[in-house]
Length: 351
Image (cartoon, rainbow, N blue to C red; front, side, top):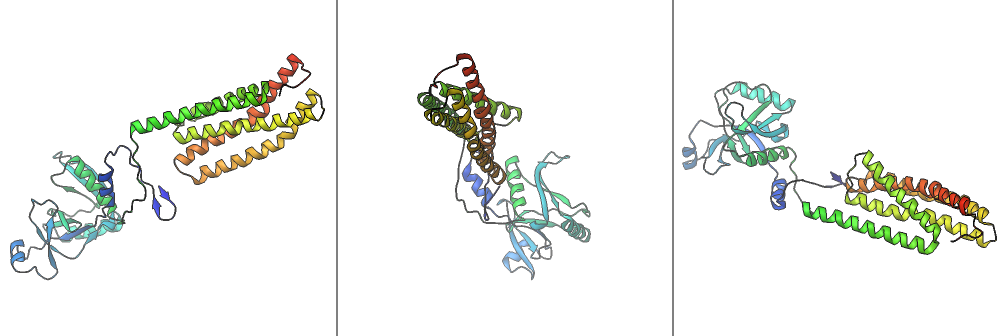
């Protein structure tokens, strides 16, 4: 994934060897195609000198002999659009199949038509992979590389060929390896932190606002239930950033209740009756709650729009939590308080 102007983030699930991965990605394979020079033998070229326009290339496999090739590059990796490891349907041999783009396919077809019964070498980083004989014109723009490949070496070669069209040096700025156990431990730590945060918020609200604090905690439980329900409905995966978003929502949700309760306290201290004081507390805190939640929701939307991966997971739970808190703080908390007033008809407010 792109990150900033000149960086990328590379994630490779299931690859267990970071050193091997950096070696593999860090290579800039240069793929070229040359005709084999049959004017003299390789041994003669080694003892004297190669003909003009020709050069001796070593083989990729040290056990294979070198080849005398024409220096002129007939095709290059820039024309390659696909390379995949697979199996030959006739021999069941492990191969690497490749395909050229339209311009490369035209040149490949012309070259193979003009050089039937000549050998055509495929060279990777100045080392000959293979030099098969052109038995007939190849007009489809695709071919295959065969050799003593294993599945692993074929896959590695296919990756190198695909990177050959866009050679670029690799400068590792940050490296992280997350195994199954580490990821599980992180999720468990996030869950523990969320539980501790919930307990801390519950203790604070009840200690500060008594019965009304209990109403706020009930609204908070409903808020979390709504978040989990919506995530389940969306079939979303709850990741560590998502858990962090839920933990943040706990504070945002009770923040609205704190605004309401403090307003009610002010109205009661001003000498207003219980019902009028509660009504005034809700009505006067309403605009502040809407402003605070809308600005938070806007920030979450921007995070989701511009962010990637974990940032989006955090933004989703944050936005859902904010919208849920607007319902629970204004509607559910008010409903609980109204029902309490109707049943008990108190003379004072226990806040």
